[in-house]
Length: 298
Image (cartoon, rainbow, N blue to C red; front, side):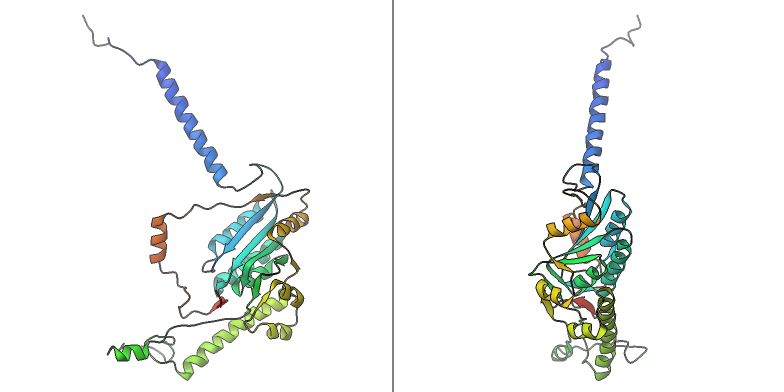
């Protein structure tokens, strides 16, 4: 007798339940994934929201902020944007790139800058492009200026009996080197760069705040101001909290009642990501020979 086909067979019900379980797991994962992309506090899928983009800490890159602004500008359910700034500034080019993006976004929909504890130098620069600037009374802002600093270790190297041979194509090619003394030509060279970058900052303030250039130059000696002082000088439009900025944005966006909030969530960096990021050359730090729109107080 042929018994090859005889034996216990798993019931079809088992395969059915496996399929249902897998489908349920995949569905739950997709739902959680979608919800994780949003911080809509009042329910997913609701209409007429205020989008929020945060700039926290030193500005070394513009990529994430610019991408977030573009994304919110193109969303039909986002009627207005709040740019929450808590930054002492940072690198010049990224600050200028964010400023330009903010200016373009305000042509599409209202964008309100809400200043936190600090919105100084580059942090103030990026706010200039918004529809309206709101500071707290105690916000530290201003610091309209440029700074560049680098260590000089020539004397230390000499004491150590260490010298560095430099072959260069021009007199100023190694300007800013830590291995030699600073010359008058070095100082003149760097000062010209700083003055030009400072003039760019002053021009942006004068244009965006509708102020006379000469008046701005008086304010732009690097000092910081409180939110109250900045309002008196015309550097900001109004005083208020983050919640006030949300309400103002909602009003300008035509949202009735309490607005819903939307903020793009980004994947949190793992420990390995942080290690790799620390090892990656960024081209900018507090002690590179690179001018910065940065408040030295932080």
